[in-house]
Image (cartoon, one colour):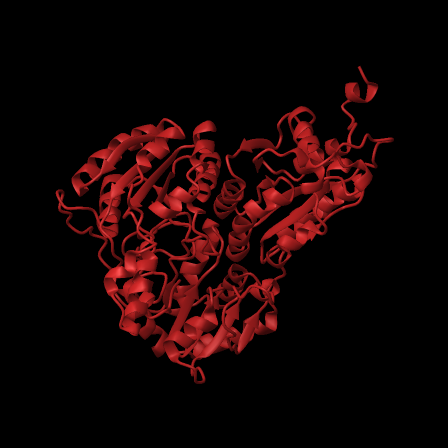
Length: 585
């Protein structure tokens, strides 16, 4: 046996790379295997003993989505390995979603040998591209293609640090296949990974905190718009405490993860993808608005207050400007500000809370009733009755709503803890739901096993990446998925109806190229083929209610249950109006 192998020292370039991933404390690497990283694959299995653990995925987009869901729960990155340019192109939509959602992940790519003299005929040539990172450079925090083994180790450390530096996002490192398979001539110098960690976010400027505190003391009507904030319970409690001490109103966003308890009397309106009438009125009445990294703050102000000057004083706490690019406009419309904190929102909340030790002011309204609506057991389910039945059947079971239909609001799914819901996928990339559900369920299994992972997906979203559930079954990840099957990409039916009406054309043609029929797709059979427990198509609220109990038995035993619910088409009136007015995609 080779003496180096006996002592455990790395023998190959990929051994160093695998050790670097292990040193970064990445628990998992999601992948679909590929020859371009065959050296790294071998090292992860045989040199670091499957640490990080490999998660086999049927498609690269699912691998990225799994890492995305995992990060939404933990705030920490997962590793993803993508095969050369072809795997990167498959995974690019998932990377874009993660970028828009500001979640960290470490994406490891690979290329055929950069040295053309080392390429095998045909296969290495089609798997080699010039400046591969250019494919995704506009929607990653940082990318690199290191030219040596020592440089690759440092590049992986830097990628992890960049990904976890707020505002967070994916980082990409492209590893030359020849470097992976290069034998080491001598050991590399020892290195301390902790010395390459992400920096701590700075504390808010004391002068700005004092200025804001004075403004808040004088304000008569404060509105706090809570957007992208942390999942930490202490941060959650501080947000509540600050709002109560200010006597403020609160707006929350169903696209973002749970940020504030739905039943708190300070909440104005119902969290949705767009503001409802009550939330808009609160914004119009405000004389000071505190923006905690609200998604498209400028666009929201304009949609409610018009294009003129905003009369209210505006305080923003967000680092998001550091991720705004020319190519992608996910940063939203420009927004004015009277005070701008370039800090993470929760650090500003903590600093302001320290300045407001006075007793809480009175809250603005009584807490809404949490009573569920009556449900007709014989009727065909709607998105709203699906929510009602789930809430009634789950009862006091703590749950995490990983994904929800576009028509749901905070009234359909109230939240009472920081993992109550995880919001949307960031980039609106249909097909992300199954993978994100699996990744979030994995994180919950590891960190909060008492919380039920629940994803309510549309049929189109599910079918685009249903293979992701195979990984959950393979890894015994408990997960309940409800598929709302309306046999259509219904969102676009509403758009087509709107365009037809505007142009005086036949509204009845709105389903052409949108409805999935002839044949109808048997979603239950698809899910069963990947190993999930299913109960066939459920055509009534009563059948759905009865199925939930059996599904929960499967999930509590570590399995995956998929319930296909035949549902009526339609959105809540406010969503229909927003879609028809062109306010949504």
